Length: 492
Ligand code: MZP
Image (cartoon, rainbow, N blue to C red; front, side, top):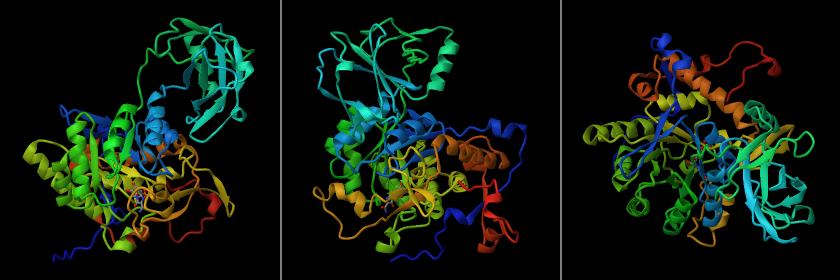
C-alpha cells in the first residue's frame, strides 16, 4: 500500500503569474502550433495549428465537427462506439472534403430512373444542384429530395437523368463565398478536373440558371483535412485496417484506463502492422502509466481519469485524479524520457476542461494540447439535434460510458454491470466558427501576459501558483449588482 498525502489538484486551483510582455510577445506574434504526435516510421512530427481536439464521443465528433474543426486548425477524433463501416465512412467523408466551399461528386451515366444511390449530406449542405456536362441544370435537390441521417439516399428521378452523359453534382455551402470566388477569378467560368481526370477542361458557367453561380473549387489545391479516429481494444484488428484505408491520419485508443494488458496488445499490434500510423495511448494519470504506454508504442499520451463533465468513474470505482496533478506527474516523466532518449512525446490533457483558462493552465503545466467533449458538444456542428428546454436551446450530451452510448455494443462485447457516464444537456452555443476564435484569443492573451510566444516556451517559462478558495472567489465578479442581460461578458 502507498498513500500520497498531497491532495490531488484540479486545473481550477492554479493561476498564472505574469511574465514580462514586450513587442516580441504581443498577441499577433503568438503561435498556437503544437505537436500532435510522432509518426512511428521515420519519427516525423505531425503538427496541429491549434492545441485543441474534440473528444471521440457520439455526441461530439461526427463529420461536420471533423470538417469544421480541421478547417479551423484543430482535429476531431471520430468515435469508435459504432460499427467499423460507419466510422470508416465518416473518416472518408472528412477526407474527401475539398477545402473550400464546393465539393463535386460524380455519378455514372448508367444510372437509371428510380435508382437509389448514396450521397453524403454530412457536410451540412442543403442544396445539391445537378448539371450535365453541357452545363445544363438538370435539377436542384433540396432537403426534401433526400432522407437519411449520415448518408442520404437520393432517388434518381426523370429530371436528373443525364441521357448518356456524366452528371456532375456540386454541393454549395455558401453562396456568398461562391460569388466572391467568381469575382476574384475575374471570369464567369471556372475549369474543373474530376478525381479521375475524365472531365478535364470542363467549364462551368456562371449563368447556369439566371443569377445563380456554381463555381467549383480548383482541384490544383489537393489539400486534405486532417482527421483522427478512435479504436477500442476489442476489434482493432479489423477496425484499424478499415480506418487506415479510409484515410485516418492518427488513431487514439479509447479507454478510461489505459494502463492495461489490453491496451498493450492493441498498441503493439498497431505499431507492428501499421507503423506509419501514429497512435495515442491512454488514458493514464501517472508517470508510470506514461512510460508503460510509450514502451508499448504510443506516439502521444492522453492524460485524465474521472474529470470529464459526464464522468462518474470516481464515484463508481473510486479511481481517478485531479487533472492538474495527473498532468504534472506525467509531464515530469515525459521530460525524463526526453532527456534519456531525445524523443519528445506530446501529452494530451483530457476531461473536465471547461473553458479557455482551463486550456491555458493545462498548456502551462506542460500539456501539448487538450481534448474536450462538453465544449464541442454545445456547438452547431456536434451531431445532435437542438431542443428547447425551459426557454433555453440545449443539445444532448452523454458519456461514452453511459447506458446510451454502450447500447451499440451490448450484443458484442462484455458489458459492465454499471455505468461510468451520464446523459444530460448542454446549452447551445452556436457555430464553432463563432466561438473557437474567442477561446483561442484568450489563450494567446494569457501567453502574451506570460511573455512567451510558443507552447514549448510556455512549458518552460510559466510560473503557476495554487490559489485558495477565497482567492478564486475574489477573481470572479463580486459585491456588485449586475442584471443578467446588461453584461457583454460571457464565459466560454
Ligand atoms: P469533458 O470535456 O466533457 O469534460 O470530458 C470529455 C472526456 O470525458 C472525453 O474525452 C473522455 O476522456 C471522457 N469521457 C467520455 N465518456 C465518459 C464517460 O462516460 C468519459 N464516463 O469520462
